[in-house]
Length: 300
Image 1 (spheres, one colour):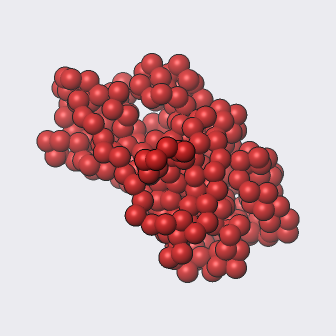
Image 2: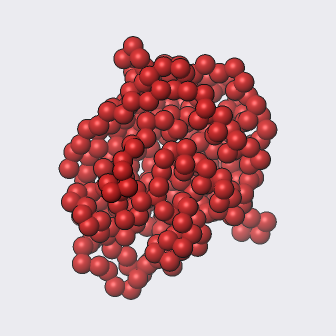
């Protein structure tokens, strides 16, 4: 499967102000106040724009866009979708108050391994697995490559993201991952259902695991509402900018990997090491080291 789509959007200040309101009270105050005079999108702000605006009839049964699903998807047969990893590349400033274009290339690939790949398995709640696999034993990856141009058709931002779709659920126990780095800077916050709902609304994201607690817990066996991947990425980038504002201005690339789901009402800790590595882990006061949720790396 391969598809191309062009998404146009006017880059206004309003979604950015709403993002700041969403993050207020969760991230440091400097994250909310440091952009009083910005004229271009900061790293991660492009997630607020260039969303598909499909009618409800074009969404899958879990509320997600069918365009980003393996084909054929009628009826939608996959049990779970997971955002695995991605790369953001920043070529030049993407200025506000202009109409910009995002060109997407969507490609699908089957993963024919007899067992679920380790990176996918680590993202799943162990309570979600059943003792019997379903008839379809493949995992499928959907690759989305995005190129964002300004009104002069200059390439400003590139984004690659990989989604995994599972069509079987077996009994397995994911391994707990821990960071080997020591945080030089850290910040603890507890995401709330309102925070997740607001961010999902900004992205026009109707995926039900982010706003429908009954669906998330009963249909996909998660313990609570799940944080969207872009919210985790944005939180890492915003915290990095608050700690290293000058270095952030020279950011050329950001690579990230989502390792485990994060849930509302669960304390999270954003960390930055002295070598520039970022990660999010589950904050705990226990003696056991906190388990990793996501990790990233900034390149300048």
